[in-house]
Length: 292
Image (cartoon, rainbow, N blue to C red; front, side):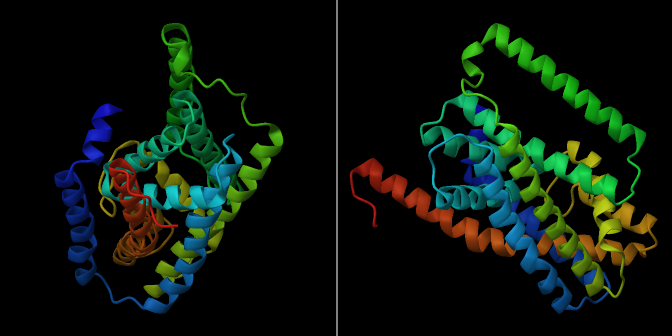
């Protein structure tokens, strides 16, 4: 955890992350078929609502902390920008843990908050993938079972060695979990809208549920980190779309556009919020009151 925090505060690492993440679509898109911007924009709008409104509200619903909606909206937007800058999106979770602990939540409770949010998000995706009729590969099921077993084992070890790291508050009740799953369902629909939009921009179409099924099936590759737009997960998504009949060039163009447009709201929302948060922290450190 300390190593990840050091990397997140390293300007060299952040600059390299930005350069790699921008170069990937910049070098890829010119060699791909021409795309129309309007379907991308139509798909981007609901995705921004899903990512930067529904996801923070889901996180808030699963966290027992006296923090405002505005706090969650800003912290989540900041975490998404840092996630784009780090392989495997790992910076997003590290930043959310940092923000929760700085707000007075215990480390164990902060871990449970972020972990519960991730779990509910994964469950929502699985429900949509199953509803789409996409058969999960056997290796994906085995990896999921392995991760679950490893998580249980880790909890048992931590409970015995360092019980103070475990959350002291009760788990979210079923009503909160149901609320989180409902918000997660809305976010999955927004992902389908963005993928359908980027595909339509290349002149190809697939049913929204089939697109979401391809996205879900590609998540197994997310276990291997990589830069935004050139990660194993992105490559798996290209392969999944191609397996459904989309030409390879069009599938690659759709995924590259999806990775590129993710920067627009991340920089506009997360970048501005991160700047204001750090400026307020600096003012507090030197004893200057922040602006209201």
